[in-house]
Length: 143
Image (cartoon, rainbow, N blue to C red):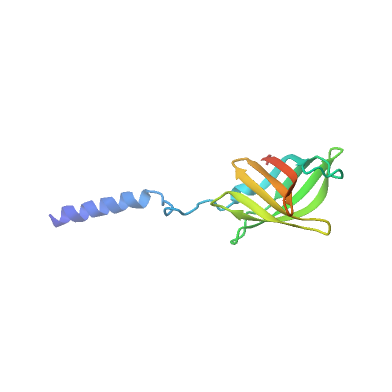
């Protein structure tokens, strides 16, 4: 009888070891690595700023978020078919909400970037403080 119990226990252990581990309830398996790549689309003006121009943009993300969720996006606008660097946007990735958010800091404006990531699409806004939509952005992952 002991041998049967021992053999049963060994069989159960062998099958249990072959099952893939499952994440704990509420834990997120999203490490943000799906963000890495090039994203292209449109950045459309909002808020009636006459100096603003709609742009075709390409965002480059070369590495996943760090352990605190920080992500850098190198942003280009396409002019006459060629990329023109616009700068780097520093954002924070929230894996649970699948959002990227960060502050716009320059000499002319203060604002907030907010993006929602859904599969191969990233959509969001740049809100110029206190509450004016400066841009609406929609990009799709191309690489």
